[in-house]
Image (tube, rainbow, N blue to C red; front, side, top):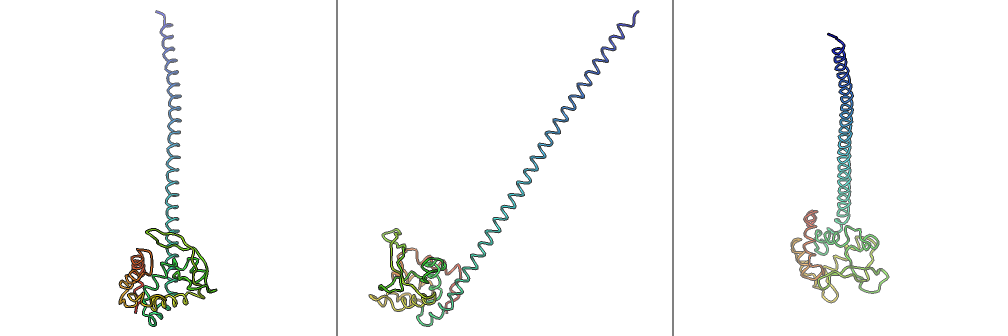
Length: 230
């Protein structure tokens, strides 16, 4: 019996095995390469997520710190404004019986903490209009509450040398009233506390804003301005 056919078959099987093994190794390398690429992609994505997360935290912290610093700066400026006006407001209480809490709250509300053009440039804290064509006056636009809505009008306003002069003129107005009604603000003068005085301003027609009293009371409570009342 010849061994040649048997040897041929063996060689064929060996060759087939070697080809299959080569294909397997090649496929394995390809799969390993693909797996490595997927792993690298996952690592890159995770890295980006981490970086973006840290960046978001940093930005949030940065803006939070900035907002906090801004709020602190505003609070400091507000306190400086109150401290600057409080001594004169207390002196005027002794002269005209106007509660300092009311004076301070009105100055804060009407001058926007002394930042309005009328207050910062012309030292008029309360929007006091000029009584005649004096040289110490200026024409400016203003908002008036008329027929249920705000309208812009142009009016002549008093100009003062400093805020203390504005505070004194305001106290005299409340104490002595207007030319046509010396008793106009009698409810403000007679008030024993800031709640009564704030109501008195509304009742006596000081402001056209229907929410004026509520705004004053809110300011007084928020900044504890009642501590300056004697």
